[in-house]
Length: 130
Image (cartoon, rainbow, N blue to C red; front, side, top):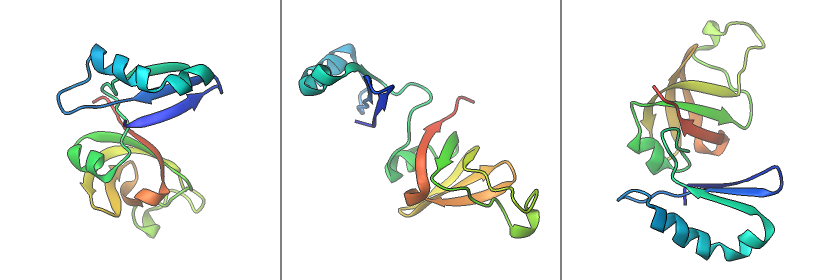
C-alpha cells in the first residue's frame, strides 16, 4: 500500500503498487482484505497513476529527476536567506525537480531556489505530470 486517506469522513481511498503493475485482480484482492473497512467506508482501491504519492525514501529515490509537489507541515524558507522574496515569504507547498533523496531528507529544485526538506516535515507529496 502506498497511501490510504479518508475523504469527507465517508470514503476511504487506498492506492496500491506492485513491481509488476496493478491489475484489476490485485485491486479486487485488496478490497476483499479490507472487508472491515468496507463496513465503515465507501472504499476505492486503485493504482497510483501518473501523479502517484511519494511516502517513503525509496519512492523519492526511485523518482529523482522527476517533478514533484511537496507539502510541508510548516512553512519553510527557500534558497539562501538573502534570496527571500520578502521577509515573510515562507511557503508550505513546493513544486520542482527532485534532485536527491537521502535517508533523512529530499532536495528539491523549486521556484525560488534549492530546498532540503526532512521527511519528518513532509505532510504529503506526489509526482506531477510533466
